[in-house]
Length: 199
Image (cartoon, rainbow, N blue to C red; front, side):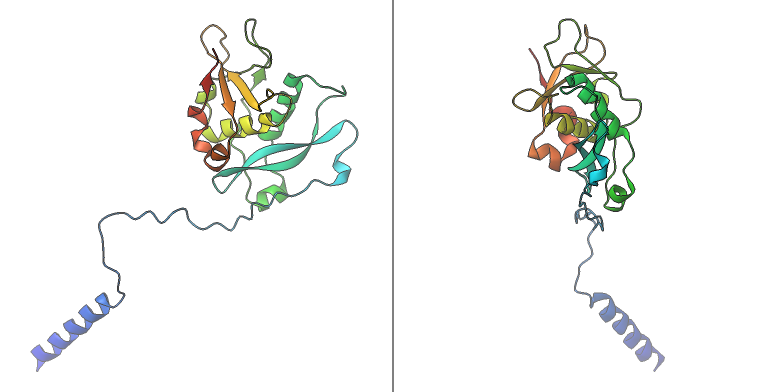
């Protein structure tokens, strides 16, 4: 009698174990990124943010493993037509600032660290070239993508919206041309390998 009861119990356990209809596997399954509650809806700056030398600019921040544009109020310069380097430095400061409360609540963040600095072209560089205090490919890929895409929509870029960046040593650090493509916005990790050498 005891043997029959034990057998019935084992059978019930086996039936329950197989009842889910999903076979076990030793192969890891990539189900994609975990669902996120981030809205990624960029907040609009208030009208009061403009004036007194401030203008509305667009910068790129990170949200859900992509980079998306948000509007910010920035002080560029009192000049009517600021130099590209002035624009680049003002935008870099915006990228380095932590997200506003509204941006953070929408899921935005930045990878551009405070130590990143930018300067104008070296002696033999083409006009419009910019040099970072570190080789562009040594930056975090997301940070480089943020910088490239933010600069690409301003006077910092050339007529085809491409940005020329190099490292601090003009003799050893070659210049590379970067383009903010849809692929880069969707997959910022490609930024560090996307630069094309400037001949």
